[in-house]
Image 1 (tube, rainbow, N blue to C red):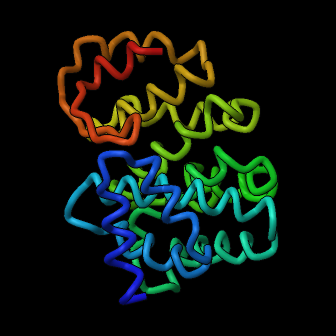
Image 2 (image 1 turned 120 degrees about the horizontal axis):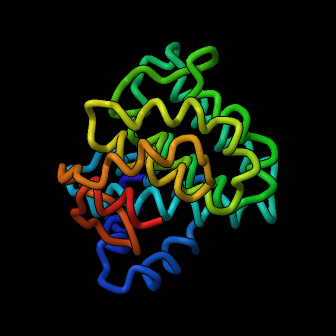
Length: 217
């Protein structure tokens, strides 16, 4: 891993990120995932987010050829979000959302567990920063599997009034993509919300206001 990690970081930083992903994808999946997970706490947000995107691409492709091995990776992520793991699980909700948005097979098996983290009566994640990542991950899943997202929309709508601008923006995005008419008036109230957040789009980190994100769907 010590030898692989610098090379993976180099590819994640490439201007032509698709070319970098092609190189990273040639490494054995289980080995490269270890390196990518280590970047979920990187000080450079571009490296962090590209590690998440690369994880989604690699694990979803891996699932096409070796589903059981892909399940092992998913179970590792679930463990990282477990209190008994002794860690926090930074970046894990984002990575899981990215994977499930790209793999129908893994989504069918794991979406219930993934979405249980947003439900107060289930495996609710209480850490506000983990909640940011979870909402972002659900937002990745929303346009492709709105059928599994819709039952969760009342719980997600609660974040529209959060003090955290990331919560408000990402919740609005999910509702806009998946559709929850009862929450539209609350989204309209965000049209004057000029708090700025960083958001990962098109393989780059951008700064946008909550209003801009909430009104773009």
